[in-house]
Length: 187
Image (cartoon, rainbow, N blue to C red; front, top):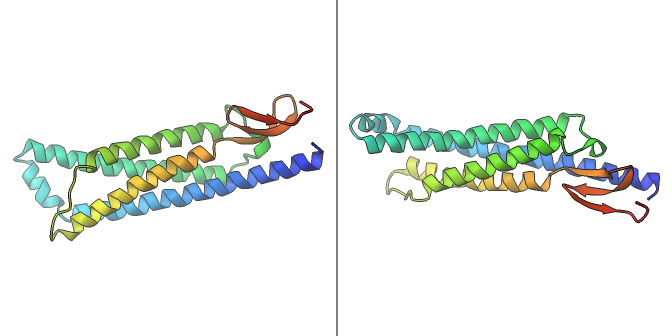
């Protein structure tokens, strides 16, 4: 490849990464917005639930699980948002990526966090049913479903942004997506 082709590929990969991180920030904001609405709707009945929890271990356990599932969505959303904004504004370029780069480490961490939080939240809320005439609870369920969906999208978005580099070993040009190498014939 000619130097200008290498520069063009480098720029395209850099633009792809910045766009992917922008999309991750958007998904993270969806997670946080849906989590906020779900938490506010669940808090409508929190005082009554806390009173019941004093007399029932089952209610106390359910209340604790509700709080921890919602908190896991918020924490994962914040980690993803901070990571994506950091990567948008960091000096990381397509040429500077390596197997120990912040890009790779943050991508793997966010894939893991998003997938784990999605599974944890969905596992608890999967057996919840809508309650007639309790719109705030039903809205919280709908928003929690949105959080799970957004967490799954977040894991996929982080997977698609795993380090893409325009330089593969010993100065050979090509594209490296994780450990797969597509090199030109001169390498």
